[in-house]
Image (cartoon, rainbow, N blue to C red; front, top):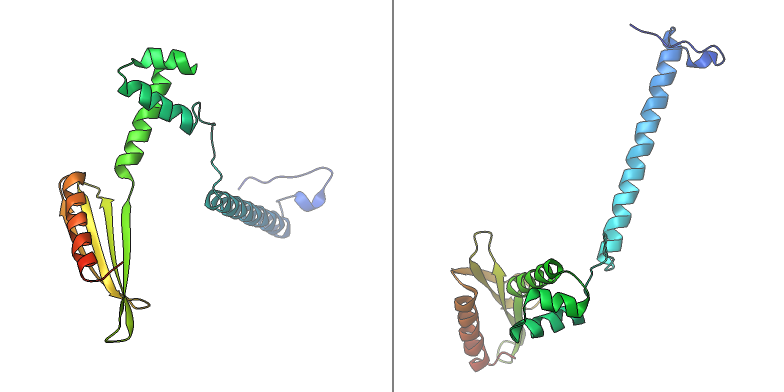
Length: 181
C-alpha cells in the first residue's frame, strides 16, 4: 500500500494507522461539507425559481416584441423582414414564435364551478381541466364533490384539443343549468 510522508507536518504521514485514520476522517468531513454546500445551493435555486427568478441568458425579444412579430406574420411578412424591423436574426424570430405557439397549445385550461345545495346545507364543486397527454392527445379531467372533501375524478381522452374544448364546453353548460356558478 503506498504511503504519503510529509517532511514538515508529521500528522499528515500515512505510514502509521493513526495518521491514515486522521486523513480518512478529514476526507469524510470534506465530502460532508461538499454535500451540505450542494444541498444549500439546490435549495436556493428552487426558492429562486418559486419566486419567479429565471436562470440563463436573457431572451432577445420581450413579450410585446413577440406579439408585434405575430401581428407582422399574420400580415404576411417574412421572417427576415420581421427580424430586420425588430433588430434581430430571422431564426430568433422563428424560434420565439414557435415557443409562443407551443405555450399557447400546451397551456392548461381549467374551470372551477361551485354551488350551494340549500336542501342538504352543503357546498359542492365541479372542476373541469384540459391537459396535454404524453402521447400527443388531450385529456379532459372532471372532478366533483363536496367542498372540503376528496371528490370523484373521471378522465376522458380526446385526439385533438378542439374536441376536448367542445367536451369541456358541453360539460360546463350542463353544470350551469344545474345551478353551478
